[in-house]
Length: 147
Image (cartoon, rainbow, N blue to C red; front, side, top):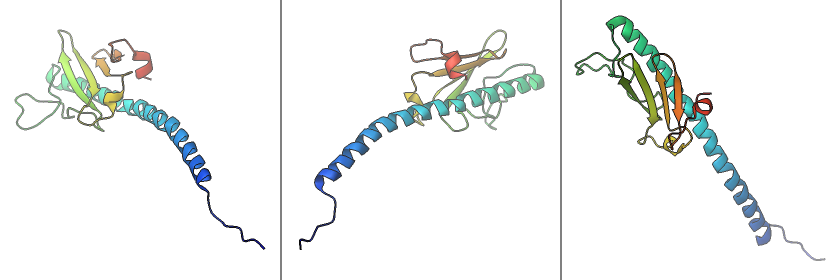
């Protein structure tokens, strides 16, 4: 009577490794694209919060402000919301115009990740509520990025 050995052969092990490699090569980039799209909501939420804060500031002070923080060392009062989005993926900025303001959110290079998003590299909203978004080549991507 011959005794059979139990175990996994090298061929079987290599086959499993190849299959796992193929699945990983497909899954990781797909998951990365999903994360980039999901984290865009951080920019839109921050800009809408900034817009609300600007309107409140206008009602209280009669003017808009570019000061996003409200530190005791500030010479002018600010909004008290911070210069980055809630989760830190975007840096916020406000530019005043003759009639109002435009608030923008750009990927934060310090907290990496979103800087890889070439489809939606800049979000903006104005005092009238006009929302815009651009890609890395400054092409309008408003419909895709603000959904």
